[in-house]
Image (cartoon, rainbow, N blue to C red; front, side):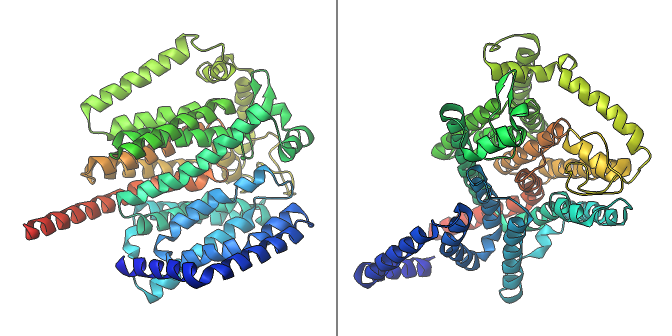
Length: 496
């Protein structure tokens, strides 16, 4: 640490005495060059103009490769923000592959030459479970109806992202500070998303949003009887609302276990802003996430007082939404309340009827129609499901068949049970258990919401599996914290 501080001091001294003219000259030339670039299309201008920044980021990743997962976590959020204002920008597989390849190459390179990575940390039940699911997804290539191009796109959210999180989270996050850093990175993205949604609500749409609403037809699902459904920089309001609910749940529960008062207050503010984003999205299924998170907290808290308080809170929330009309004057609260009365919702009844029709078709295809073929019309498979899937779990059912759905649910059910067992019986530190339970509860609530909406979209997948992987890393974090505490006590006793 002292050596690094010395280098930083020398760098600032050089800048102050000799280097500042060079920095000023390079900055002027860069902006003149950038001004020339603006004569091209916005996408080309920004892409080329950001090359120096990308080079700096790669160099930082090389220097701090031990923390490569934080870069991956941040980059997945960073690449989604430009989609809000660039018509030509397409968030696709190439961006994801670049982030992933850079991170993996750095980790492999430094593990070979520095030998600092303990790969045993990621050798856990979650890894082998996800590998089993990934193997099934690979076998789907043999499906007679499979379109390899569609498979290659969806395999990222089905298998590659989960595997990356399963491997990288335990070897990167080894203490409470690591969990806090994840929260800080995520909170910045949440703030940006809420600001964009606030701008949409109070200052109107930009060119990209107008194009989505009135050219591509997004207005039919986002300007409805209950009002306008805002979607920030996400693909749609459902994706935005569910992501905000994930953030609200994680930051809300984490607030209980954070000791630092300033950081606690900051996380509380993020929770409030995320709830605001969730409500203005008009996404009813999002309400399942905080309920799921609080239920998980009841199971994992190992505190009678905390469990009773949480159960009472859940009971009051359920009663207020189900049996009262409090807040109905607000269109967003009124729409959210309709989630507790699905039998009165025409769109829900249509979904139920469609699922009955799907069942008659899927029963004849035990391995489904093929991965990636339930959502897009750009591919030309031999056969196609005539009814659109209305949720992520229904997509799994259609694409991988009832065998795939049963396998997926069994694998993930087992992962959640095992993760809960680890937190209950292998983690002694209440703060670590609570912080990781916040992430696991968020993930559990997400899969409840995934039954009602197709919300396993970018970047939700990375956040979900990061949360689950944190629960599997929790025993190692607990041991590390206890070891550090014992060393501090030993040093203090030696000084005395």
